[in-house]
Image (tube, rainbow, N blue to C red; front, top):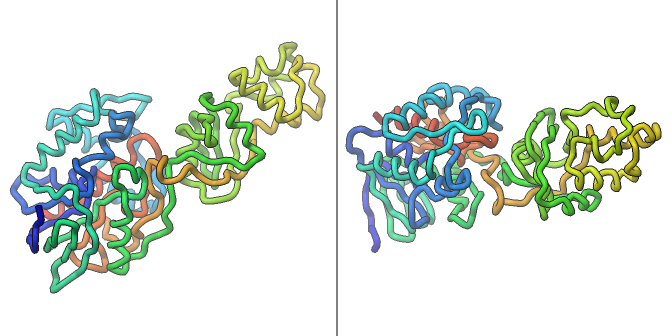
Length: 383
């Protein structure tokens, strides 16, 4: 079925978190059309958080985001985690707090998607539809799609980033921005694992083991779990570290709760007192060329080698790429977007929401909160 020259008031490219939230925020009927190249709405919501969707975080701050701080603060203070949780609760969804401060859907992410669909009762959809190009003609937006042409008075770009190409992620949001002469800052995979240089290939033999570490990258310290993987290293701490890494070295403290000096008088074998899984401890000792013997028998030179586990520095070879990335770093420059409306400063009635902007949150619900907060700011200007 094709829609030829269909005219709407508001066209939204993307039926994900930010696009659906925008449509859900209207109490009165508006002529809204959501366009998405997937066969169902909320595809990324449905697979996130192990299928339970980490909706937001109780410890929401602007420094949990990579992006221009003033821009981020302006937006999240207008619709923060408490506003979101209250909004959801009034509609029958009460996310459960887990992992100290992270809020997840109680049963599954379908709960959130179904809620957003119900609240979009006035919205219409064009699914399985790719946007090929967008032009500005006589003050209207002419949207050329694989199912015909849409003409809209207002256009909202909520198309997400390049991560998860298997569920239809494309560059259409960035392409549209550039076609309207917006600056798109360098794009790269974010919240993603690191691949390794040959010197660290021994990490791969530890695949499947998780340990707590502290990672320092670009003056940012991240504490959490590191997971040794077949392709390199992953886990929450590594994924957060990837936000702040572009190239060069990172430093890992593999013994964040341990003082090396406290071990020196022990008569136990060093592998037994390193606060590491046995396989990990022995692998590091082998790599450092240290015999696994009583701690009080180690030489001064061996202790010096062992201290490197507190500040192990190396340069990742790269990342696992967009297919494994949670998000896309970079995006539409926030210098060219009004934080009080989400409207372009270059083109009237053109808006940008969520991940397509050059703002990326850490793990823990920050990116979904960003999607919902930007949608709220934008919809507020329409009501």
